Image (cartoon, rainbow, N blue to C red; front, side, top):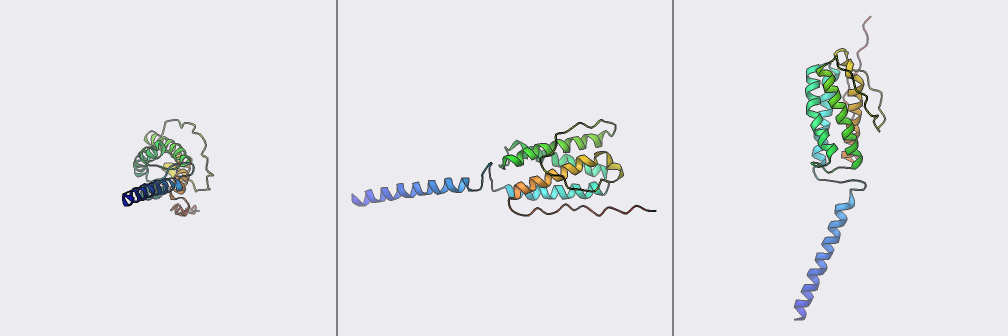
Length: 176
């Protein structure tokens, strides 16, 4: 009888210990937001999309830039919604702002005669990036702000890890 009581106490104590440890682990990395094991996969996907967009935009390829924006926008929408991926609240907000710039850039590239809408400012400082070449000049500021926002999203997804720099090619020198 004493053995059964001791076993029951041990089971209850172990269960309680596991519950407390699990709760502590679940909240350890989620100050101010949420955390998830698929955050690294999302970060890798967003980094690949950001770098691909940067390369085609600075190459002046309008069609591929628009296609890349169309692929990036739903991912940013998922980040903003916070349903598919569990991420920090600040990163969700930045995802929403970035998605707006992506949609607006794609809209203007589809119809260059369209008038650009005023978008809210980004909560991240915009570094000095060179302007996009000729055919993409109309959306240069939007895409530069989008690339900055996506870099900010990557910083949120990667936590303390360094974010790889944008693969911006050197600006060509003007020919005399």
